[in-house]
Length: 392
Image 1 (spheres, rainbow, N blue to C red):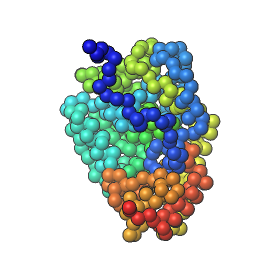
Image 2 (cartoon, helix red, strand yellow; image 1 turned 135 degrees about the vertical axis):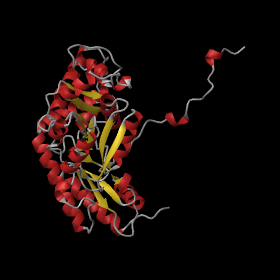
Image 3 (cartoon, one colour; image 1 turned 120 degrees about the vertical axis):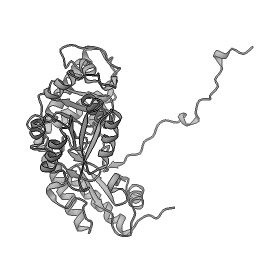
Image 4 (tube, helix red, strand yellow; image 1 turned 90 degrees about the vertical axis):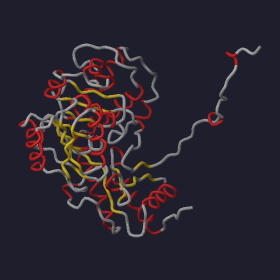
């Protein structure tokens, strides 16, 4: 008789018999961006347990780095073990309760995602319609907030699907005048364009590790203002998602004066983010913001020399980290992206949401925001336009 413990119903896959091999590509799309050597090397350090003192020290250093990046003194500043989408879900789930109203700027793909999440939380979503490629004005925002008195106003600081930079100055104070909290998506902007959480009275801001920080995907930095925490602590119902409940996960990060186990932390990702934040601190935020702006201007000038047009018409509304470019005549997005990758190993993004089929996108984030990278992208696009690779 055969011992079932010594048999296998599914055979080991032949695909795993050979070592992993990954090509080296230049990631100039809307994200992720290339890892810095320092972040990549840090990810290979020995692992630690979630309750080890060395892990606590690591988390404290990350928290300090994030407070610097967010420009905040918020005690509840931490990193979620998830992608930027998880940061969005956590921001909305902690603030919204069934029956609440959420006013959201509708000018991009990210409205669709945020409104879906808010609706699943039982909230009523009120959109403010804005033409894609244009930002929300403070006047339009106040008109909607004054009328609906929502629990929160949701805006995207760095709108990666259209390349719009959303001004935030005055929005926080306006929201607070009506008892509304301001929730900001800074996934594509944090570290690459000015953002002042405390100065601008932003209540919840979240981002992603894989964009300007040049760290691996899988982490979402987030910060909550004291005003936001006061509301969370007085909720009628607990946050419906335990994994994202800031009152629970905040204990893991020592935000409330103690440490407790929440989940097994992705500590090797923490190593990489810690080094990424150290690089930001070494350069300085002001220098980083200026470098990204100069790189973006160089890119925009180069694109215009090629006869290409930007989706965002006014320079003051253009996002430094992601540029949406209208597709050239007689070329589809698939041909453009295929040629850039096949011939040059340069990754560009198709349009997303309102820009799909209409534009492609170029990312200048972190270490890729430099003159050499910009010139390479411009040269690649020049070749792609002249000599596209037809579909097989």
